[in-house]
Length: 300
Image (cartoon, rainbow, N blue to C red; front, side, top):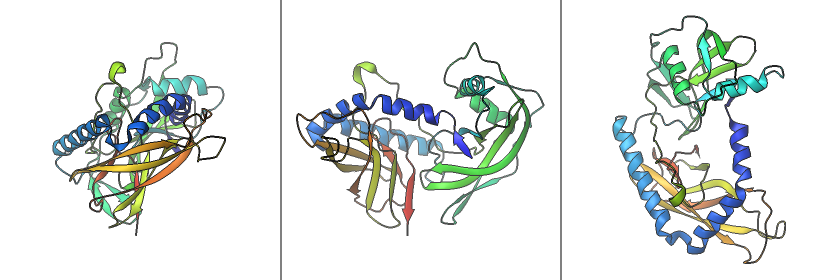
């Protein structure tokens, strides 16, 4: 099974800061969807997305969602601690000569059968991209040794839902785990602004959306408070869409169940729905804090 590097770590961090998220959500919920900062963030996110589309040549690109670096299999106990940290730090070397030439054109195929031809990066470029996206140094780690590279295909998440796409798979010395990197050359990406601790973004970030093809209603999912009455506390949620011709930013507003109820620090999976001014079509759905795209599943 292929899974993104650091997924467990990201979930651990997400739930570790639920209390802080709840405070920020409560602040935005008190002011409701009229919170001017939320709308400023939404408009800024739409502007960044429009710039990213223009830079990539328009709306027709593939929008990847989530981490493009991953792995196949689970680390063995003897090497797991070192190898996990080394991979996240981009600490690896090629023990063999990796192909520098880009392969022939590849294809992305979505679950509804639609396809798109894409340019494919070389194995050397894939390795360079993994290094460039590494999180932090690991001075006590032993470098991973790449012993082979193979162009294959695998499941990826996109703004249009799950798809099968070209992926580079790298064999590593001393482990059965394979390192992977999505091999699409022209995917559309957007870079969030630097995090400002003195003026941090507010709001609740949605992490997925679903709806019907041609429909004007989206259901968004996120981590929030328990359902009203559950565990002695809870909250209701509503949503608002800030739209442009290229994307939709969803603002989620919290309505606490009780002013003086105390909730545990365990987040709950919640959903709410939002009406769009027009069907989503090929537009991306962006979360409000950083303006990053989330996976969208549209059914007939």
